[in-house]
Length: 343
Image 1 (cartoon, rainbow, N blue to C red):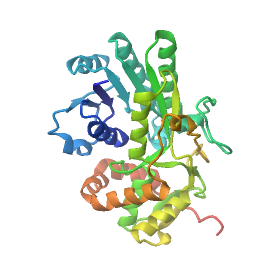
Image 2: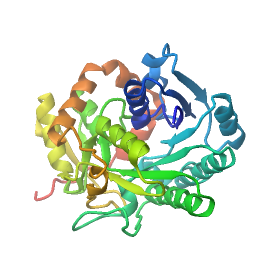
Image 3: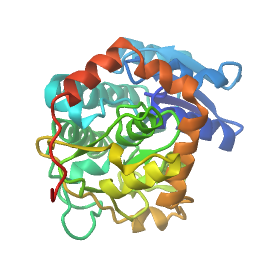
Image 4: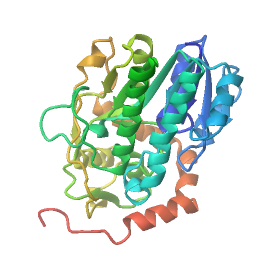
């Protein structure tokens, strides 16, 4: 592996991964291939513009001709696929775009990797494909039980990747990551939404009773885990990536408010979303057997994330003031307020 095509590299985890790989591997070249949808942001990569080992290609992973042209032009030997529609809430109102990008787009990339003889294909997936886990923790061999159009589309992509390994011998790996937090995450996602709302003294919308549990991992740890799998993972295998520790959403919100010095009166309970998974939990012993360990616990990850948004208002302020974001926020949260549990 020397020439990587990072699809979706202008997004949150993708842009952090690009930085990590350029820093960690001085002999690698990284080409970002991104459609620049609402969550793909050129600002996420602006500091790399003068790096001679970095290039950017504007393109859609559903466009087979453009994908192959980029692979040939940059002599790509490895694809790392971050490109996806990822927001559960949006998938409930626009499932079709999730199927197109997350399933058909994955197929297009796999076909290109197969036909052009690439050395490696890595799929970045999610713990949500396991569905809600009320007890215990998910292992990589567990049954897929998706509960939203988003998780179903990601599971479809995973199955396609495994099928290409079995049917055609394509050298693939998959990582299923828990909820990542950190720099450059689009502020419709819960942690950047809560931080930026709190900084503006706006309510933090809490779904249902706020008791949903998530494994929040720092994005830098997630990127390092993907690299470990690229270097040492077994072909055809899946690896869970997370801290192995869950936190209730309401506790996350309270800790966040404390970090920014804002009152808990900003907590605003709203009607829960349909099919909201109660708990995700990952067994991460398989990735740890490769030598990986998370460098941040939840408190450290949250503190680093909050600090970045405080120090980088220039990045999120123009996103949240834009018409696209304003229209989404209004349509999604207006009129959903309910009484706090127990009142």
